Image 1 (tube, helix red, strand yellow):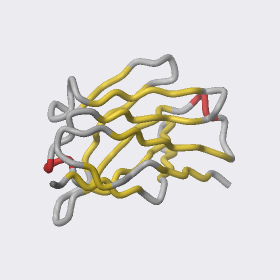
Image 2 (spheres, helix red, strand yellow):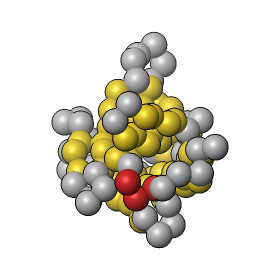
Image 3 (tube, rainbow, N blue to C red):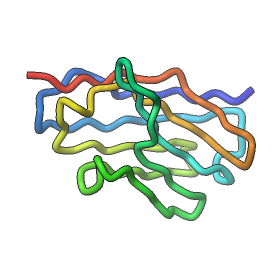
Image 4 (cartoon, rainbow, N blue to C red):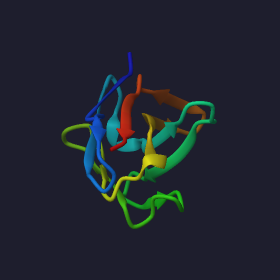
Length: 115
């Protein structure tokens, strides 16, 4: 059974930083593309960043230069370092693991950016 467990969400002031983690179990982590998505209240879920099996990364325009995705295959963990956070970054952040038609999701972690 594949499980993805996110952690690291919190309340932070504008301009602050957070690091999200997602630990995966029950799958061969290294063969999957990993991604972070987010969903704000009243909005559709959107992709934030993805990282391929060989470390290639892609980012949403809204987070380029502020967020960094990385992975540690030995620890079966994907990270999202978020700097210079803005109120519009407030959302539930979800970890995703994908390979072709296979897609698995975590339960999400809340990030709130507010003064």
